[in-house]
Amino acid sequence: MPSSKGPKIFHNRSSSPFSFSRKPTVQIFCFLIGITGLILGLIAISRSLFSQNCTSIESKTVSVVWETTDDSNGGISDGVVKNKRHKVMGFVGIFTGFGSVGRRRSLRQTWLPSDRDGLQRLEEATGLAFRFIIGKTSAEWKMSVLRKEVSLHDDFILLDIVEEYSKLPYKTLAFFKAAYALYDSEFYVKADDDIYLKPDRLSLLLAKERPDPQTYLGCMKKGPVFTSPKLKWYEPMSYLLGSEYFLHAYGPIYALSAKVVRSLVALRNDSFRMFSNEDVTIGAWMLAMNVNHENNLELCARECTSTSIAVWDIPKCSGLCNPEARMLELHKMEECSGSTTASE
Image 1 (cartoon, rainbow, N blue to C red):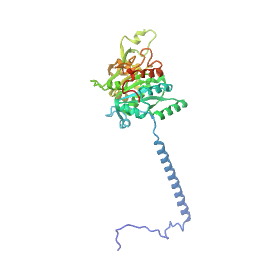
Image 2: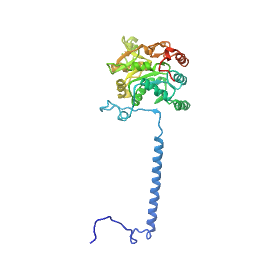
Image 3: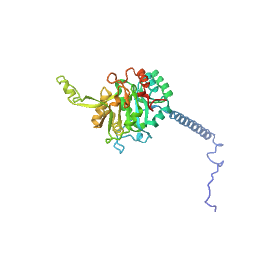
Image 4: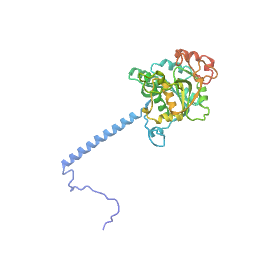
């Protein structure tokens, strides 16, 4: 009796009812199945290769979608939390627009390095990372010009939001959310592209120890508290404005601590009340969050001094008047450029 152990080998016998030599119809049928399988396989391979080629293109545009959840991450989407964020002491987003090519040129000729290596050296010296912040537009020629500038300098974060002055509060919220997703920072700074900034002194300001982790830092001013959402015809204007005022920072530059930005990130977009002015909008949010307001007048200095941090023509202009030329003039002054912040 033969042993049952060992490999089983199946032989094709000519007497098989499925013999191709005796059943040409079956042979043709199997041939067609084989051809069909080959075609489907080639389609699958081509799709796979095409998909890989598309995903290998790194996008410069930052689009962050946030959802409120009940997990231990404080309502932050897991997809963002698990991303590896670049660690810095402070991240500075320089708000700019499509009509500000000249301003960006002046900044890169003065206190902001114009190349990646220069930005890296500045970050190593100060602990601060700098990027221009801009949205998008439907005008293709403007996007084309921007893409050329990005390829030359590569110092942008492009937000998936329409670039429009009336939408500045929405852009600001999108900025903080995108910045939080990309950078693990102790402070997130919003700055305009028409101020002369001293990065080394800003670094010293942000590095100070503070007892309150929820800090709203800026050059503060007073604004009205809106006590009524709608004004009826018989109500005086004083009822709408009220007699109380709240502090909020001037728009050209201010900073929020990481804990404050984390709270903004955890909220849904429709949780925010948007006003026409960005600085008032941020001030209202900070009032609702009961954060610590830290006032520093060196963030709105009218001229460069030994202690000034940000220089602009307050209150004449919300920034430097004629910033493209004024930026270059200030940089020639020893009081402004006489430090490690000057671009090389």
